[in-house]
Image (cartoon, rainbow over all chains, first blue to last red; front, side, top):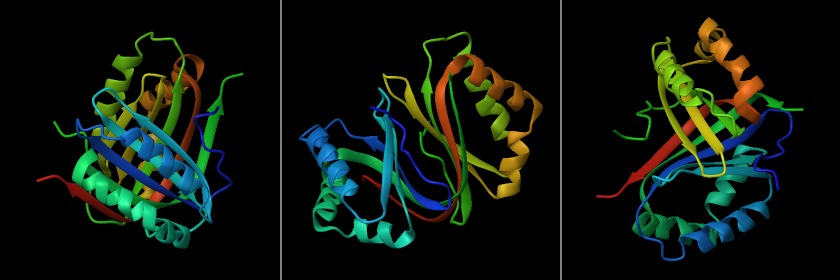
Length: 110
Length: 110
């Protein structure tokens, strides 16, 4: 399975979530998987890309058709509960940035 | 040293670079370090955040004051040379997305 999101021609939106994990596991992986599935069911969802390194620092980009979809997803009840657990258990620190993608280009080896 | 970029209040820009590395090393680490240093010297540079996982998939976000700074950085000669080496040696695939950050918020544990 590709690690890259199959995003359309811009404009669209990206939520880029930079985070430092704590040492606490406590179902983090299960919750992350569940939130990925739930996000994919939301209106306006376009895809996700994510990488976390061996020091626990990670960046997750989720892509959305418009700003309204992002606001709606932030307010989904199960997602709100996960966000709260994130702050109490799983994350040392995070920054969420919401940005409008203006252009995109890529490369793929033959 | 913090892994987080100390970005100002939006608006500003993010270049989010998603990439899959090849198995080829060949000075990749040295070049990555050199490009990080060179980027930091460019007008409009605000910071960088980066994570690459054990499967070689990574996301690097660089932050910029405006769109013109991003275009100028893309055209810096040493950076152009590095981009070319990236395509011939280091990357299996990449997507670069240029986006305008509209809002940002964060959390830090006490």
